Length: 400
Image 1 (tube, helix red, strand yellow):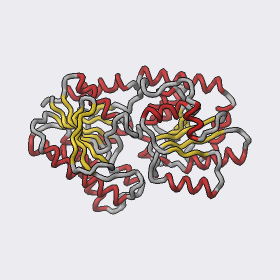
Image 2: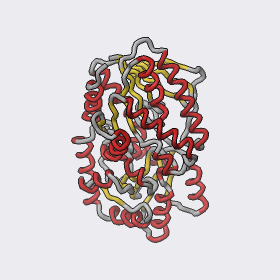
Image 3: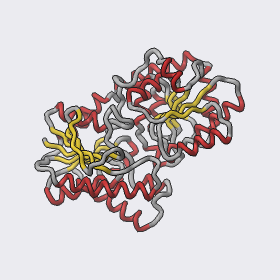
Image 4: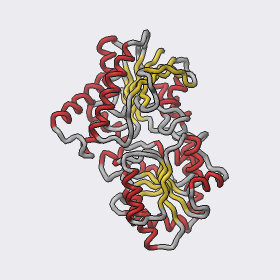
């Protein structure tokens, strides 16, 4: 099939960010399909549209400014601008047998919906977050008129999709609640990349370049640093560790987003010296930095809708063979506890994270065992090779 794949935030391994759509596209091509990716280039592109081939994928980059640092109104403008531009690009394609649209935002489903209505071509919709419920619970969609419109659009997109892929059990449940059935809904979570993240000798040259302590016990949060990630929780825990113990424990933030400047300011004002900030890096450097650390932190605000998350950083951490701390009381908690590869901490009690950091630092044998369990889980259940094949099966199940 000739597949048009719409993903506003498409990234390759050479970029900083999630690469799920890249690896799914590779597997689709391996199975005889052609893939045209319609994506946004948020910066550094002068032309309105640029066509490139990236490892077999025909990528159409649309100039469309976007940043995690944008406010709500700026983000909304970027989403609607991409919706309009990607619709125009999609309708210019000569032969399309199937459209894949992957959120967020929800508006990325509009081009696929219009193409189905006007060209009679089916689409697969991938739900990476339950929009609009996420912005509603976060207080970003308070006006009843746009909220009602967003809920209407969600239902319209779901009901017209030939197939829906949800990234967690909670997301699948949310989709099923809207549809009233689960006939064409699959759950395919985010993917571990064991060939990209793994345990090896530490790159001490890189450690020194980054200004990290050589002997410290390091806990890392990497990836998006937005409001939803609840990163003040980690700062609170770091402050408790600094004030209440002489243990050499360091908290590392790797990435970018809306709250970075605020966190840096807090570090300076409150003299929280055991916290380091590193700008976002391509995947290979990110992997090296994660390998320098002992524990991965996957935190979110204490909102029920965020319990359904399926964060890239969690699965990359499993691949890296390090224990994972989560503070969402959902399926990720069940995952780390049942597989003995991490722990859950109360999102309202940073002292739990502080205490856990101290205990784990002083129990390297237990830490090593959890790391082995994490790697085993990545290889046997969440390996991208396994999950990309599942995605291709979903695609092949659609009658075109």
